[in-house]
Length: 254
Ligand SMILES: C[S@@+](CC[C@H](N)C(=O)[O-])C[C@H]1O[C@@H](n2cnc3c(N)ncnc32)[C@H](O)[C@@H]1O
Image 1 (cartoon, protein in one colour):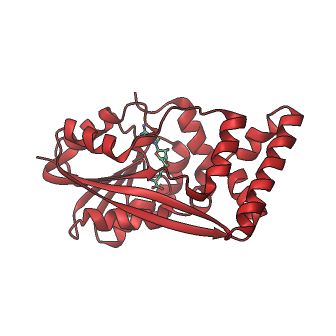
Image 2 (spheres, rainbow, N blue to C red):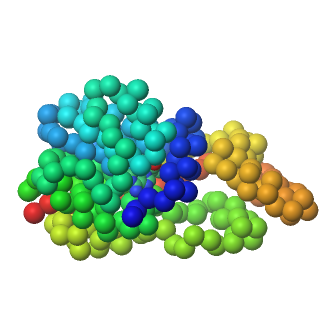
C-alpha cells in the first residue's frame, strides 16, 4: 500500500489549482523528460502524473503517453485536458500493466510522498522493457535565505513528518530495485516575490493559513507577527525570492 486515503483527499483538493500553486513543476517536468531523452514514439508511463507537468512534455516529444495517479480529482482533469493520453487511476505500488510494457517510466515529485517508495520502484522496473529508462524528480531541501521562516515553522508547528528523502537515498533505492547506471543532475528555479504579502499569499495557498488559523488566537497572532518581521527584513535585505531546488535522477532497467 503506497497511497493513503488522506493523501488521495489532499491531492483531490489541490487538483484545480495545483500548477498555479506549485509554479515550478511544469519547468521541472520538461527538464525531466529532456533528461530521460525518450525517442519519438517511445511508450512512456508517467506515474503520479498530477495535472500533467511531465506527461504533457512527453506528449510534446512525440511519445505514446500513459498517465496514472491515485487521486480521482487529478485523473479526471488529466483525462479531460489530454484526450490523446491513456489515463488511469492506479497506485504506484500496484500498476495494472504487463511486464515490459514501457520504454520509459517517469515520476515527478512522487516517490517522496509514498509510504513505500521501494514497492513503486519495483513496479517501475517490472513494467519497463530491458534497457528501458526510469526518470524521477525529487525535491531538494535547501533553506538558504529562508532560514528565519524554517525556524518560525519549527517553533510553531514542530519538526514533524520525519526527514525528506535525499538524492543519495533515492539513488540507493534505485540500485536496490535492480536498476543500473544511476545518474543525477540538479536544477534550481528561482521565483522572486514582490513583497512580504506575496510570500504570505503563496504560503497560504499551500495550507499554511489554515494551519495558523487552527492555532490558539494568541499563537496565531504571534506567528503572523514573527512572519511579517522576518519577511520585512528579508525584503529590505536583497528582496524576497524562493528558490525551488530539485534533483533529476535517471537509471536503466537491465
Ligand atoms: C507532488 S504531486 C506531483 C504531480 C506531477 N507529477 C508533477 O510533477 O507536477 C504528487 C502526485 O502523486 C500522486 N500520488 C500520490 N501517491 C500516489 C500513489 N501511491 N500512486 C499514484 N499516484 C500517487 C498525487 O495524487 C499527486 O498527483
